[in-house]
Image 1 (cartoon, rainbow, N blue to C red):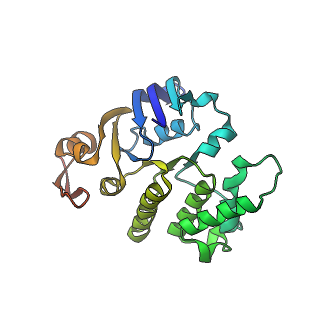
Image 2: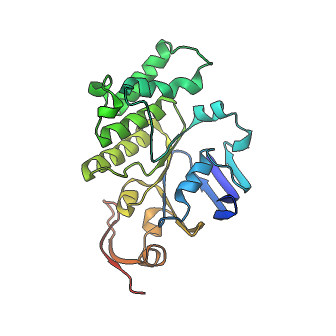
Amino acid sequence: MTLEAKNVHIGYHDNEIISDLTLQFEAGKIHSILGPNGCGKSTLLKALGKQLQASSGKILFKNSEINQWNRKAFARELAFLMQVHESNPEITVRQLIEYGRFPHKRKFERLNQEDQAIVDQAITLTHLGELSERAVDRLSGGERQRAWIAMALAQQPTVLLLDEPTSYLDIHHQLEIIELIKQLNVEQGITIILVLHDINQAAMVSDRMIVLQSGRIYDSGIPQNVISKKMLGDVFKVDAEIKVSEKEPISIYNFQLLKT
């Protein structure tokens, strides 16, 4: 297992968000974390990405506690993209992607030819060649998201954490990002852990799904086993039709609120 949590508790001050969570993420797979607002999805992702420290329990990366990892060495192995990104509005796409090489460089060390080749590869993988000299601030939402993913790819991580990568995007750009995530997993072998709100998108992209409810794991496993009328009712308080096909991902439709 590349990354795992053992009996982890996470919170802010006296407010515990994640309670006694034990979870393993298999290398080379796409794992999606789902659940209602406030259940702890982003909190868990931040802890896995060394952005937030667990109050108790252990988070292990490559069999070592993440607290024992040097931050720069950790960034060479694991890239974490938060839901909201901030950058200099005048920075170009290429300059943004070059930031991904910083964990591999000494302080004030300039990028060399090898670094630039890695940046070129990230640009190619995310289909940003024609936009590489454009200011990030002038990109569409989907283009901007691809640029940030390209920056993470320039880190050459073995694990990529994404917090709601399709939020605020129209349906075309949502599907574009989902396809890119699948491509990076298949072609680059990157382990991907992402938080999603859309259950259908999660079913399309995921090898494994983790459903959280009130800071605890309600269920985890392959989408065909996790997605059920009972789960939708218990966790999301909705009823829906579920279509299962051997050749296509599970699809959920005709959502209705459950009467309470």
